[in-house]
Length: 137
Ligand code: SF4
Ligand SMILES: [Zn+2]
Image 1: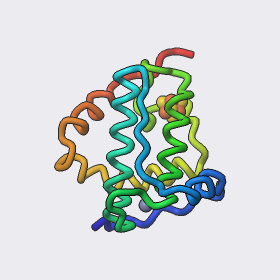
Image 2: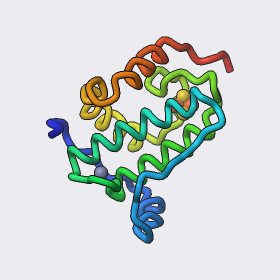
Image 3: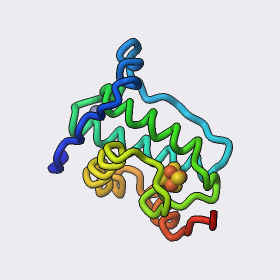
């Protein structure tokens, strides 16, 4: 069980409202590039761990976590660095809204250590990716 504070729900309810109409199962998203796919899979795995440990979710995510994951997928899709992106934590731009960024911080604090055990290869890749620098804009 996560010992960290729970993330604060976002004020943007549009995604959550849309998800309320359908079960918020983890959506499969495929990006054309391996690097972006890896980022996506890492984020999805962390949100899944967090939602399971913090919100008791099993097969599907709760509406708040599904909303955050949907938001992250849009940010990743529109990332100005594309396949050359650094990890978001090391990004000099950071395109996330303030409350979304805080939610990701809370999730990483909770799920980060568990990722080592549950997804060691993904964790290794993410660590290696953390040495990437953002290309000059
Ligand atoms: S935070 Fe930076 S690296 Fe992450 S998606 Fe936004 S622009 Fe791209
Ligand atoms: Zn959740």
